[in-house]
Image (cartoon, rainbow, N blue to C red; front, side, top):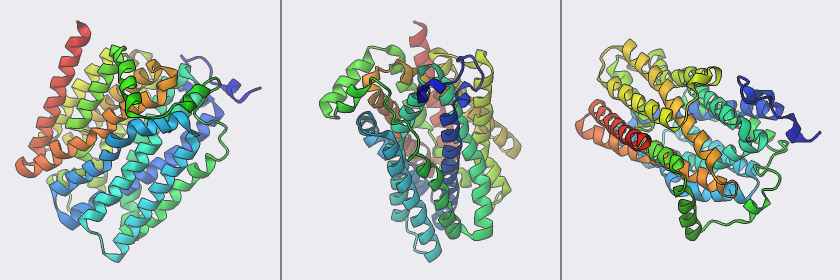
Length: 413
């Protein structure tokens, strides 16, 4: 029996992707690696806030982290089309280990400067930009198109569960070991996935996809890619939707979470900060489980647009409430709708993409969904330094709602 013969049962099966042994192993080890990333974020954001107390720097932290996605995602998608995706992921893991090690040394020696923070966050961003397309192609190679939507939702559960567990572990490690030692210990969490990839029998290129390996990235190829994508309006709408949500709000509110925690009475890296930081991820885990369990919640392009509009409304209300309980509740609700529209959009784009261009189309989508998050460092962080982060986040979320409504009207027509 071939490796591919052990694929999961019918697509209607709940959590069907987990019936595949190799995907189960990948899912669990990727969860460990993503938890390490989350620990690094919660520790570094707190130290940046404590060291500099600057919304502008927090905004720049977001910009420097996501700019590599904006610049390199299509190119790394081309690399994923040409090379063994396992090796690209291992390169990414090596960069993440290097970044965590550098954070730890800077924390321990007391030599952290603002430019260090920007440079390390950019290294982290480069690692993510390298890994995103090959990860998506590896999962597609393991499971095929039939179970890809299930795998996308499960990967989202893994990512957001790590964002839920990571803050708790990060705060705990900081309190027990201090930020420096905590980040040095964190390096070890990247090793399991890195080593597992040496024995995973999938390259990200299924049988018969040899032509994809021969293609090379160029500006002419990028123009041809845009021409191919333009022929499928659902791909265009999902790219625009992902870009608008990322550009105006993205994850910039996470970098400002120490400020919001301080607003709600948290003076140090305590349980209240950890809960606030992890509430959005908790909601996303709940939302992903609902999407995977109840078929009525598994919608298409129009449903994704509606969920994005609701997400924008919730994110606009969050910074304006004075109640800590209400803030946590709104962040959890935002997480539910965020995972809904992002997982639907990603599945639509990846399934509809031409097979010989899949890596590059995925890279183009990542440019929009993740690269444009660099802009949210301006719309929320830099603007927040002038008018207050509460108001800047509310206005940015309002812009998301307007774009979603425009896309909905276009889709209805």
